[in-house]
Length: 236
Image (cartoon, rainbow, N blue to C red):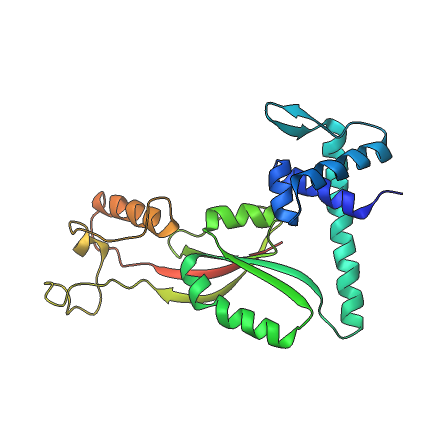
């Protein structure tokens, strides 16, 4: 009979793409990963990995078994959750990622509430931009991601993921007190397109959205109001 933990190791190698990534995901050494893969190959009777440069890749048999392992592990988690619910307890592990603002504003109270209500639930959290977090949820590396999008540019989610809108917030602009527009209750990008901006780092969602919006606004006529930001939770 196949060993469930060895299947979990193979699945980790498949989702992370390397032995090092699997070791980091499962919090074990790389030698432990290699040993488990070797034993699984003995059980199966065929090679599941092969050398590729300085790393490895899954063989056709390894890819096939990793896909089946993903389904099996998901079913095991569902069974364990069902039994825990039957006992009136919530157990297991939950991995959450959130974009930096949400991680600082939302996660501390959320983690505290989960800890207080579900003592046996192991929760881990990290800061991660949506373009990193969403693929991680899709690959099974995360259980939940709190991401952001804008009403004028909705975030596209891959097939198989579900989402819930947590709340909507208006995008605020901070201006010096003596700025000529500081006293206006509502501004548009057209009002501020020629100003110098202080924004987040290149590659982050807010920075990229701002550049796209300013470029778009410079090519159109009329006033474009500042977008609302939606906070969205994406899950498998």
